[in-house]
Amino acid sequence: MKKHNFSAGPSILPRVAIENTSNAILNLNGTGLSLLEISHRSKDFQAIIDEAVALFKELLHIPENYHVLFLGGGASLQFCMLPFNLLNKKAAYLETGVWAKKALKEAKLFGEVNVVASSSDKNFSYIPKNFSVPSDAEYFHITTNNTIYGTEIHEDYSVEMPLVADMSSDILSRPVDVSKYALIYGGAQKNLGPAGVTFVILRDDILGKVDRKIPSMLDYRTHIAEGSMFNTPPVMPIFTVNETLKWIKSIGGVPQIYKMNQAKAQLLYDAIDNSKVFTGTAEKESRSIMNICFVMQEAYKEHEDAFMEFAKSKGMIGIKGHRSVGGFRASTYNALPIESVQALIDCMNEFEAQIVK
Ligand SMILES: *Cc1c(COP(=O)(O)O)cnc(C)c1O
Image (cartoon, rainbow, N blue to C red; front, side, top):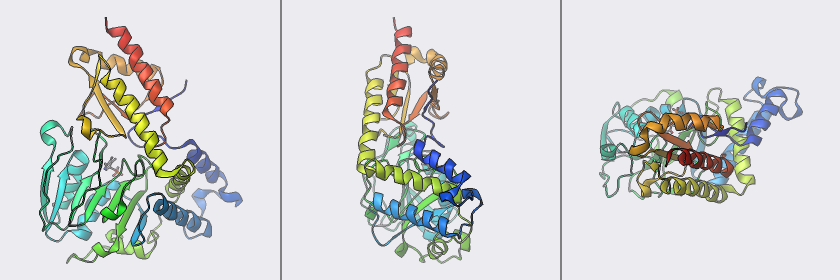
């Protein structure tokens, strides 16, 4: 049976990226060597990482004065690497979910953290508005897409201090004005590639301003100077990221991906809004186009487990909601085809017809 992969992360990747990776694992570019057994200092790998950096810059229109790094440690390492490099006294954070909370917890080890606003009062079901960021904050940190709650910041904020964003789950899903940000980071395993590589896009004029000593491995300047090769980078994941970037370019780049993502999200949100049984959990104007969270309405709550089983029997994978929200979450990342969204809707409608008298 056809599987429809709605997993939140690691998650669905373009088929061609997976096929090209498996071919390269067997024989890279006809060298007779596996991608897994070549030197990261080889010409072959240098060409791969150079192409990945160049494609990232091209697809996101990253300005000249920015660097693109591929590091290890996940987005979670960035939670502490960021304040280590940027925070002397005070930073501002927008608290929009568990990932944002984890990020600001680490920052507190390095200085004062001002939480400018929080949506914790309604279980992070919305993006706060009308907050002000203290002008003495050395940077302002946001989580653009809240993977667990299905909310997303749909604009590029303009603030006077460096703007820093965790874009783990919406990078390259929509156009972003990179010039508004000083630093953007994320784990690759939602929209870009396999687990094991983290991307960081940054402007180097924000560096060198803290008083503390920084271990080489945690200093962005080290990785900029060494072209992400201070230590052995995650060779295989970077290869797959490059293949994913090539795929995005081949289908028309970020504007086209964005159109496709909007169409998928619209289709599913419409189905949820028109349902007698299901209801969305995020406030409408804060809804994410990447993670679509829904539950059963009170009167039907008891059927949630049964729906989960039914959906599984129809090939739906990874639709269980995060335990802090419950219900269901369909992640509609770049590589998920709209046919999978339609299959989920068909499955919802069929189940609804069974339980609504
Ligand atoms: C998944 C996720 C993370 C955690 O990423 P790791 O690479 O596992 O550390 C952080 N932030 C957001 C928004 C995420 O979706």
